[in-house]
Image 1 (tube, rainbow, N blue to C red):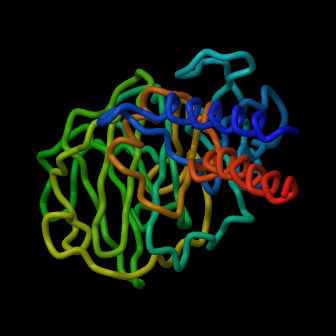
Image 2: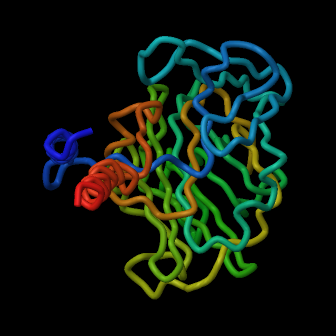
Image 3: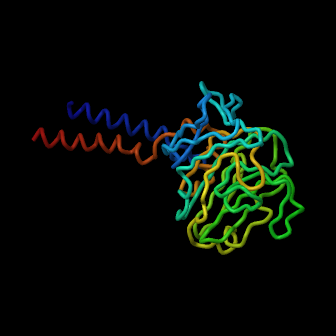
Length: 289
């Protein structure tokens, strides 16, 4: 390849990269998750991994459905009846322990409101919100019973339990996007349909406006999609994604309006193309001397 041809390819790559860059203040696509499931399997006892290589096993009569938040060929969701149905990724039991940041993202569609049903559980299912996320019919933390129709998350950090209760009125029978993040020394955030929530109650230690604790996740013993504290989920779940980092508000907004199926490799990898071409130019120049 000639020197001039290499330069032309380099210029094209740079122009393409700059054109693809998001506008200032626009939602930003995150990198692919550490683990994720698109539930596009159509049939069978397994939810194949879309990222991370860890397949999930369906329990009860859990199955797949074509009712989804996005329409693309072959798209599917996980359908659960709330009575013994869920997906479990047993190979990830304990995988989150020791991490200093976490993002959990889900598309959920409940069959009813005023529910106490979990879309994720990181511990043995019972009445304790030790690790996971769910619909909560009314608050409990620090006497927060007046808040209704909320979303609740629990985590174990440094061996102690911390809980987050959202503002009220979130429960719906329409598709809804939920992103929960936590970072050591920073605290927790919840985004519903891409919008930052104002919590009704938060355990001291994960409140971003207080003095967030520094530490690591602990006591994660199960990896259950559609099961957890209180009761199993009744409805649909799609695009269950997990990062061992805390996504930004712009990234959460992107996920609320784009299917994760379109996620591209880490942005840094896109830079390798023009950088690699530049290296080829240097090699070409040296070989021509």
